[in-house]
Amino acid sequence: MTNINPSASITSIPQMSPQIIQTKFGDINGDGFFETIFLMGTKSPDSPLWRNLTLAIFYGQTRQFEQIMLKENVGYNPTIFLGDFTGDHIEDILVVSDTGGSGGIINGEIFSSQNGKVRSIFDTEAFNNTLKYTVNYENNYKASVRSMNPKKLYILDLHYKGQDYLAEIYHKDGTLKQPIEGWVDPISGLYPIDFDRDGTYEILAFQAIAGRYHADGLGYIENVLKWNGQQFVVERQTAAIYGEDLS
Image (tube, rainbow, N blue to C red; front, side, top):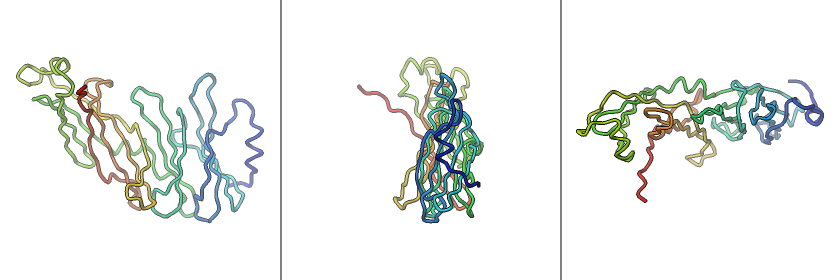
């Protein structure tokens, strides 16, 4: 940390220099003083893409200034959210941005003050690597989704897809014309929710289930992530499917 006047560094930024994207105020280290948290980045010319995404923290008590580069520091529509994710009654920092891909994949990272130092305690890239799935079409107009962590099996009924869709995949007796594998996307939604209303936020993470191709959506895997004292783990997992339009 260095003693820097944040207002001086913010008001005199030239074109193409880092800009303030969003500002939040909260006590992120438990000292009883509000910190000012800036989400900063460099705007791409003629594009909504932001690069060099960085947290800049001005500490209310010490008047010191700290900058932390995000692990995934390129994205669209970057935002910050303050809330207690670890249960220590101190606000943590959630940063989310869109990757801009067709799957709606996001980047997310959570920062927490641990022993007087702000550090990253979660990022979607690393967590995606712990979530493994297989998706297979089955006979009798069904698809199976297997989760490896936690170990779960979901059977999706495909009748809602309609006869034209099913006729492309199945014989008239309900058997598959050929094996088909789908997949589960990386995290495409990350939402802080205080399910227990105890002041500590869990995270609801969405992952799209794809069938034969990306636009052939079969539903979503919904993981509720909770801090266990050392890391975020899947507290519960469900699968959600689209409903048939009866109108």
